[in-house]
Length: 79
Image (cartoon, rainbow, N blue to C red):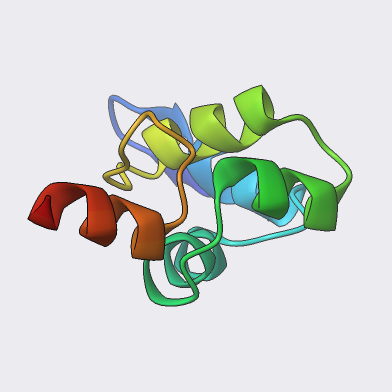
């Protein structure tokens, strides 16, 4: 249900995430803890990588823009 708040109108943020197949916490875990790329997360959710990047931006989830798995990012950083 939408809750009316003063000055803000309806809480659209809650309804945005209710209509998505994944939550901000799940996005964070898949990207940072499971080291999945936005491409892999998009495949799992039947959306495009661009959609995943927009969702991550909306949830303020920090990401790199390389779509490189973390293991490869760490290897490249140490060279």
